[in-house]
Length: 91
Image 1 (cartoon, rainbow, N blue to C red):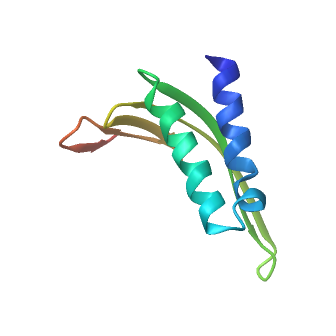
Image 2 (cartoon, one colour):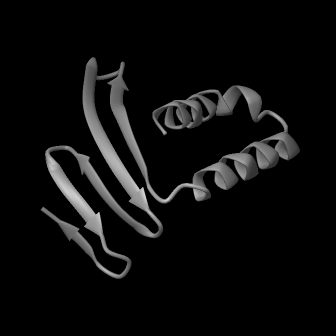
């Protein structure tokens, strides 16, 4: 499962390079969607980087998200946001 997540993240990382043609982009997104929908749940760790050269600000934050169907749990900016399929909760 971990190898598959790494593969999916790599696909998204190179999405801008590979998706220069609209038909290629659609095919790539269809493949990613098909792969993602084949899992019961997905856990992703990520890094959020804000880089504002004008104001000389660089901010790096780590986060994670767990997806299961239409439900999710996101940890970012020191808070947790959960969606149970009908309501969103912030802790």
